[in-house]
Length: 294
Image 1: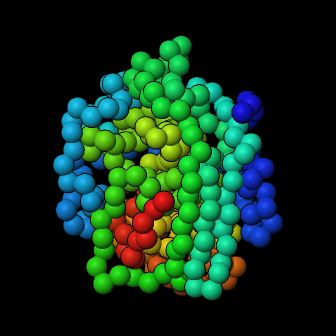
Image 2: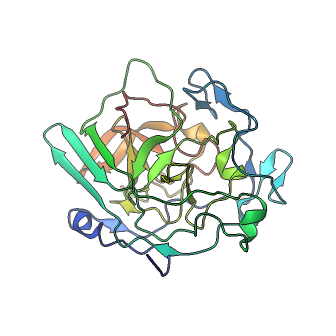
């Protein structure tokens, strides 16, 4: 590992890029003021909520030690929130996405193609005052076989704690909750790319990141693909075809809708998820049938 600038592409990603058309444009841009998602956990699909498989949360679970000026009442201000220092390059980052018949195979080692902060959080880091994340980023085996042409399930299903999808950067995507059931992006301190490791060392995001890779943007100004959910449906950035930022009101309870997207090199009208700046940021539930993440 060496230090360099964020948003570079790791050597292990290079072979994948040959097959696809990527842009380095940001996948997300944060509003100045966002409503807190604390308490917005549901036992069924519900707009603006996370339909969580976990129903009981320990208010004393490990996590951020406190909050600062970026949380004011029922809102939080991303631009005021500190980030974990550092810019560690993972030159051995690897991800490979292949189609094999009706299956999409994803193999990755969960190390991101962009720089990360220094973990564990160092004592001289201003983030240490609020979140003393003691975990180190470690390689993880991601081995997924997703449906290449996913279908909507008869009913939506809950999202687990842990991985709910994988980004094209090679890192895992989690839901919006921290271990206490609160709004993770608002309370936990992440690095400049919006990620951090959990206790096993799995580096992950809880919301969109400017470091995410977008594949094949369009039609129009529609955001490109940033990753895949565990049910096989694509996760796209936060812009519609007119370039406007999508909100929860534009999406269903699972954070998706049906529309035209670039999918495996073709323009297809299909269901897909979107990132939004507002909670729950990624997925509220699974609209398809998820495979078990491993």
